[in-house]
Image 1 (spheres, rainbow, N blue to C red):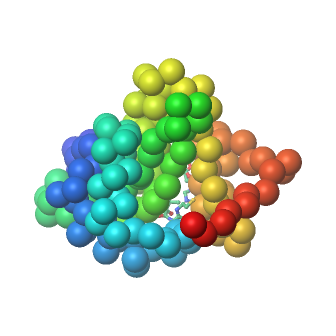
Image 2 (cartoon, rainbow, N blue to C red):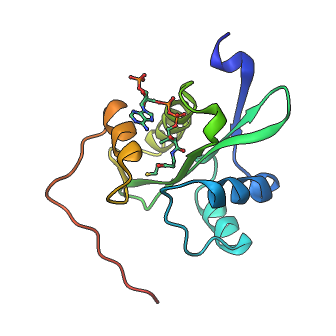
Amino acid sequence: MSIHEKYDFKILDMSHFVEAAALWKQTEGLGLINDSVGSIKNYLLRNKGMSFVCIESSTGKVVGTNLAGHDGRRGYMYHLAVNKEHRGHGIGKTLVEMSVEAIKKEGITRCIIMVKTGNDGGHEFWESIGWKRREDLNAYSVDL
Ligand SMILES: CC(C)(COP(=O)(O)OP(=O)(O)OC[C@H]1O[C@@H](n2cnc3c(N)ncnc32)[C@H](O)[C@@H]1OP(=O)(O)O)[C@@H](O)C(=O)NCCC(=O)NCCS
């Protein structure tokens, strides 16, 4: 059975928030700091049609998410998560490809993902779908 027979891929909107937030909470390896309804709503408004969910067709359950957008120069991905029971079927790869296509249509030519050190599965995923690990960069942040 092909992935598209078992799963539906849709643009992520606020109707998915409760289920998506529950998935993020139970998923290892995500850096979740400020995921209020307001912050996600704001993000989706600023980045329309670039974030996607995967829904299991038989149950209507959200089993995967990818938040994505751009700042006018670079694309960024956040909160790529696939429910443990549904991993290894190409859902993560499909969600990323859909976001990349949407971002590309906006004229953006490079996307970036921050992966926590120690998230070995995450690192392997990005490398196996062809993203290049940057050895020349470290991330910095400040709380405002
Ligand atoms: C990373 C994650 C999203 C992958 O989702 P998935 O739907 O299982 O991934 P896919 O089935 O699309 O896999 C795509 C490729 O990545 C590889 N891959 C996926 N997870 C992997 C892992 N843990 N270790 C090694 N390779 C992995 C697959 O083998 C596949 O390679 P192939 O196309 O050559 O067969 C999922 O494991 C997850 O939610 N992890 C926890 C959250 C996380 O780490 N998110 C990323 C944060 S930056």
